Length: 220
Length: 234
Image (cartoon, rainbow over the protein chains, first blue to last red):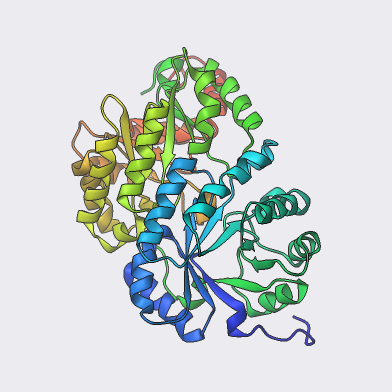
């Protein structure tokens, strides 16, 4: 990390669930650590929304339910069922993974069509779209991201953690494409503070940091 | 011992779960795979509409994954997804259990969510339940498999085999352990890192009744190259 890059402030960071097969005790440790760190938001897998909501209590941290993540491969009806359940369980925001197969198949319109019903469902709530920049490439990914804004997304997230790592180049290209007013969260494989600071300098509004940074557990 | 090519292909779920695979890539995968007579093709939910018209009228079944690859959905959502895929026309469902609850040893949770999906997957459609053996402590593998069986699994599947999870591959020991605990009528699908004919045979010898492989074509072609009378099974 360059000495000239200022470290990220906690309100510029979010938590991202990258622990595989986490138990409730492990989730609790990670979520409490993220809460103590004062991050702005906590992304959670849909089955854990109620657990996270309960652990956070009166914390102002937003609970962001992931929808059709990490692969973006659910059918539209299943996506809606998952989103409805997440909101009923207490999610403040939704983050839907766009279907990258449709985008790569030349069906960006269909992929974006999956955003509209969620926009209608999440009235008054923040709707995020995960754009898979690492998988789609910066050009196609940025085009998809711009379309997501037109379809009603409030926030763009660069990647799920299965796409690959977010890079400074991806964030810079996306910022250039969507303009300075769009809210961009750099997500996907970030665990190092130095990278977070670089991504912010490249144009990210916030950076999602893997929960694994707050966990010491290991898988058999 | 596998004695014919047809028997070999009938053991294989030829698999393509690549994130972001295009419709054109999946169609080509299906068209390449059908002539080999695999038991089924195993795909992600959003690829079902691409595969169904290609597989219609062939002997090759279609399996779709539910709550893949993390298993982190409410049981009602898993059941909804499975039911929708069955309504679309898939023959088999490969569902992932909530792997965190499985690691805790919450066997009731596993059984209840499998039972919920079973209600949405009526026989003769098959329900395969992925218990993600590589993340489980050794003393939990048998009990979690038995819980899946009690919930209505037709086959217990060892692993998602999803490389991005960073977990180990399935071993023949995993299969033997499950075989020793499950009823003889419950099948075992070995999946995760099975890339060669020798590995497939090792899994079958250990008790697997089905094998998931992204290299199914390569495995059958390896069989064709094996000299007649080879002690490996031909």
